[in-house]
Length: 310
Image (cartoon, rainbow, N blue to C red; front, side):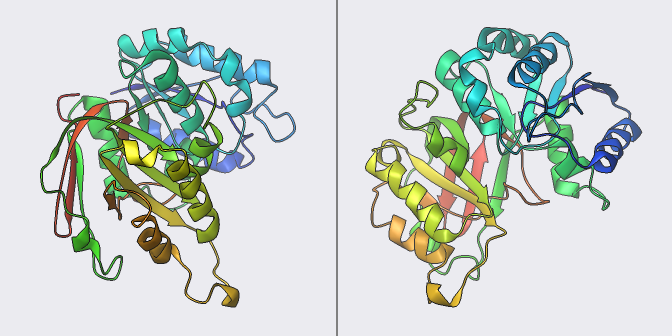
């Protein structure tokens, strides 16, 4: 089984019970779990001061582990991006360590892609607390995707968009499959915050995937509009929207929802937009290799992303 290194580069761990439960679950699966000495450190809302979290990232890269898994998201990576040891992380990845995370981890993933390039593939997916530490058992699909990543058999993801999810899904059909495109993206809020900085990857003709949580549709649209006006969306071969959940609509919205956002966005970019990707702050999610070369096909309501050669 795998050697998994647990560290906290972002927000402080408040739920110690979930932390311990997640470790026990991974151990029960036969994995060797190594916990960073500052994994439970707390300073303000962060998992330790900036220098503490930078040191934890360095230890994760030097651990020789099969997986470097973050405890949780929150906020904290953006403010330390200038000091992250990108080359050390890239060397660790080259030696076989898979860096896995979600949410705030998007900042590190995109900065690494910008600084090193797609030779250093990271994985958008699991968090220790959210996916392994909850009282309920981990989602079977999420767990299976994690195990496939571990044993190297992860080949891609496919999904079907129902009429309830999107009545006009058939409109988003690729005439020709996409080949050799860079898969990149992550949390929409974090990604948008990097626009205009040296840590925003200049990916063209890629497949951009996006997700977010607790963001009202008008905020989602505002961020997507910023990406559109900056020319980011038109430069992609496809935009794939994952799950946008845990927001509250109010009477003032009068029908303005995520479906309305998608419909409007399709009038503002020439790039095809696909929905329904099982990825984000939800129990069921596929792991996605950020920086990998992928192929994509979409016909009717069926979609498939393939990265099997990774």
